[in-house]
Image (cartoon, rainbow, N blue to C red; front, side, top):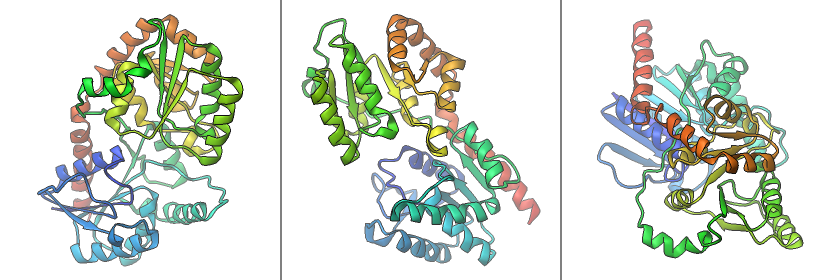
Length: 371
């Protein structure tokens, strides 16, 4: 079978896209990846078609994707996220006899456009809402999103749930990173190190977290990684300077392998989202699992998916009172570490894509019997 995977994300920096490409390779003997951005390296099992000469041009991407579908005529088409939703309309109008899998890692269904980018997102949401029900399989990123999607998009059956369970596999030279980042961890032996990869953004609650850790003093250190909103960064720097916080460090965006090292040297990590949009409220954070696979308990906001995991498995503390959460995690640190280990042992990480492929094949057999 010929499988075509269409993705507008840079697959090198998006772990879920990497997993879906692995799914494609399990489903067929001929795999085509269509994207503006090249994958990690040449893969003899994957034919790569580059969209729009490697440039981020959305309407060009849709036009060239449709042409590629016509040229390649795949048996199975995998569409990743709402950037590909407009293709659903073309497939429906053309009555194409293709088995369609639609993977949703984001859930932008309550957009209030304030910019051109958001207007385009509203445009994508229109196609998603009208045509998603014609996909043969819809994949959601957690249980909560699957339930919302079934009702909102009027799906005949609930989406298959494929969580963003990510583990950083990269190896690193510990001596090299000790030289590069050792200064972050050479404080008092009792210092409690907190890692946070949400960047500097009000919607990720960076300000609230930094203020709490700053006031806790030198026995606590917050290490922030990730991108930043320029306006938020300016306000953030002013807050740090005004309060003379000396235990907050911002490193910017770093490769996943460096994030893994920093996690390994920290005590806990933080996963926090505002409760302002459906996408944020029902977040599906891969960073949470990256932390757990490093054996680190988590401090999370009270968004339902995060709270469910913390309450059920006691792998961390879900609270909007970050001070209370940090103190609880430090006080009972070994208890939470033990629970993290127990929970991770329940996850069949190596078989998760194989299990997903099995569910897809079952639906494919049923579909072939109907046509």
